Image (cartoon, rainbow, N blue to C red; front, side, top):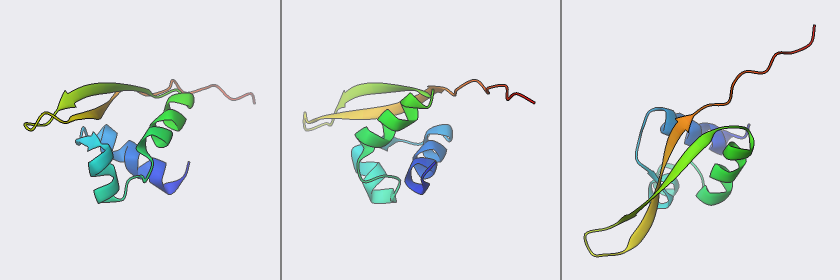
Length: 75
């Protein structure tokens, strides 16, 4: 897993506020949508929550719901 995805995943695991803006500001990921998509393809269940700022601008916040089940490796 790439460094940016690791940072983003760590933030999600810590239940930190993860939005496009916070991800860029904290150096978690430049393209949050792509990073979230890659994590979802790996089996992470990530919820996208639509919200609005006090000024009425829409944004998306992400929340980790569950992690992939460990796979059994053949001996």
